Image (tube, rainbow, N blue to C red; front, top):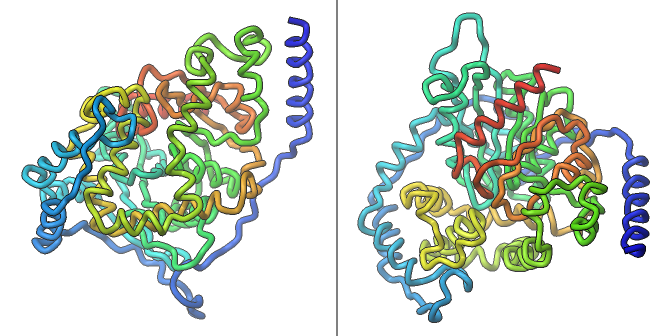
Length: 455
């Protein structure tokens, strides 16, 4: 017991020392050119052009022919999803994809919201821009930038947009009405991929900041999960005077001694700021933290080192691409789904929605360029980039979904985001929050904005 008290005291002192030596600082707003060749001497075309997703018989026939020629390996007996995507269930997915999935219909779904492209730093950036269908007299909508991650896309936000832009007709209060902008990260889907090395989250944050300025927004809210949370965080570090508030449902908190306190948390939870709910979500530590990281991070090591190698296979095989991506929508939604024969995929998502996300990657051929984002952000070494060591001094809201890959207690989040004004334990949901639980996430965004506006 006395040894534990001594260890707790030492850790407490180290944490206090680390916190007290921080200074409020911002990232330098630089510039870049990611298009092919050298930067043109003339100014960049800043026009905003309407865009629509299109398809063809040739595209669909090619997909069907590749599915028809699939070669699958039989799964081990009783392996379920413990070895990855179970090929017995994959046969069902492929049958639906080949014989029932209507890509032309889903293209119409994608074109339901206004889509655009514009050149920024040499790249054609794709985004959707959704304005409220109606506004009460004298009201103006609140601009909100929402950023996806991997292996998702802008399509993840299609079900949450109505709650934000038309809340009254979707069961929410009309106190907060948003104008939503959802861009595609460069190299994802319909956004052009970089021709040069180095396009990381900070460069992407700068590009999206320029996008918002081009749309006429000097101040705006940002929201994201996965890579989107890091990009939104970087935007707040780059241009804090333009970002009114940051709302995230995942936090990459690397400069943090608090994980070391988990071993003492059972005895000194109050001392370290842990709640009973935190203990439920983090214990047993061996299973819910360390084993979880080992199980779910294999893809990360590949993509952060040699993304082009696996990209060759995935970009050539729609079946391989589907298995690789859909497995994440199983275990990242709920780790217990790996115990199910079907990975629990259809418990939270429809095959139409899941396959639409796959088709965005397949038809654009962007799986390799999307994976390079890991190399650009992690390939230089652990915490090599300055922003990982910086705090965020913009008002922040955090939604802690219980099935996120690793739970981040409020104490951890506040270390990175000192102006945290809203921290919510969400009732249900996992990594793909906007896709899985759009109403819950929308309500928490509104809660955060309400608290911020009261200050």
